[in-house]
Length: 562
Ligand SMILES: [Fe+2]
Image (cartoon, rainbow, N blue to C red):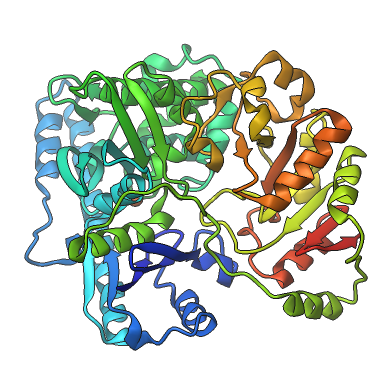
């Protein structure tokens, strides 16, 4: 059974599943080179069919998300009525009430616009590929990515994002390939909109720079602005759900929230970020603690769980036995989720661990050589180049690595990565400069699996997830001493723990580096220039290498020196 999964929302993507095995996934932005591009990923589809010699007729199903377009399943707008009732019964002045109700009606209009747009895009797919499109619920697609790759037959699955298909969060019990819906939160009680509104308030791009708020949070005092930030969203103990407050929690389209402006006059950006992060953690931890079960495995997906610090806090909860976060937790992952649900609808799909997360395109040696020639560059191919790379890293040189299939999602896990020593904290400033980036968080480390327990506290919990850089860990004294450049001011790091099986080339580079330096960590950051998508093809890689001030490009075993 061959399934093509499609996501047409932000970070639009495709996935290809053959008899329950995920064979291929890529985001359209990697191909068209426009960050966070959305729409139907037609270029990726045509390259997939061409490169893998798949006939469209051989694809049994096309699957996507967006059940709100189904006229039989009417969109539930009752949440707007409920919020208006809440505003009317509040202590607010009549002028303020009218203003807020106007905002809400505007938000509703925007939601209707988004539903019509989804309708249009799905119809476009139907017409172009002349096939029936199987449409699934947005949050169930997120949940499917987390559950079917957790390796557990029995797990709670929590999804949380801005909004999708009329909701901003859902909690499921997943048992023997069935999902049982336990709770859901309306789009007006959205954690994603809560965090996004603050991202916008602090002058960053919402739905894109939430990581900067998280980085900034470590520099602030979480308590100073906490009371004010808490007026935006809380955990409703009675309904066991997220609840935005009438006055400050009405999240307008595009993350505008005029009610927040005053905060900037009273608090520093760092303190606002810090209180926001704390509020997010408190609300989500209360939610999870209210699950009526003593000890649980929890699987997470949805954009909110790109927050690596939140994921750490969840992992550390007493009642959480183990945790799994799908590596492409945002809407990019929906194409995978749609494939899983479609497969599971027709033939039972087993939950299994993701052993291979390199799901994009690979390129042959001939294609690489041709591209090197096109740019008139010279290269080394013979000798022990892995050992040479390790020696250069030990000298403080920066090496970009390009090999095999690309990773799917926001993190580079060694196939489209930039490596550099983490000995000197100043590298964060100089590397950011060389790549044209601004970040408040240090670069993330890559660590040899056999040394992980000496670098991170309580490393054994959440071990499987640590392969994908989806959560932070508290660092040991040794880690802070050996690799300070990869440790944040709050003593945490967001590592990728690497094994031989996961990525042999990177493992060998790191092992060689360890032998010379006695340090089992290197910085691993994504191979891209500022605000550009991660490189996809050899051409993208060479272009970025030449534009940046990286010292070496190690591309499929060919070593190019600047
Ligand atoms: Fe989503």
